[in-house]
Length: 63
Image (tube, rainbow, N blue to C red; front, side):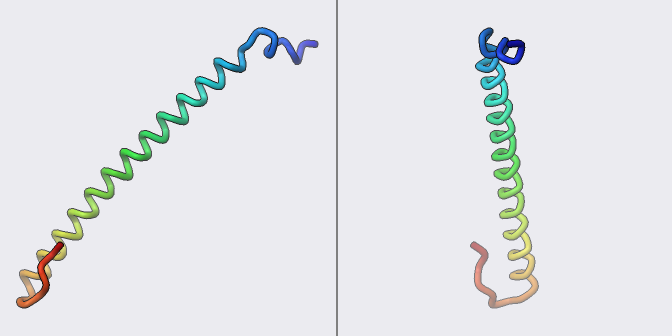
């Protein structure tokens, strides 16, 4: 009966909430990191495009 003590006391609900909170915080951190990397990458591509346009006349404008 010692294996069922955790279920009788109700510790599983608190642990589940803690794991859910940790998963939520990890997901938010990942989303913020991807958004930051995406913005930096987009600005890098625009910078490279502008540099190429400056070096080569008659190229299409950067988007």
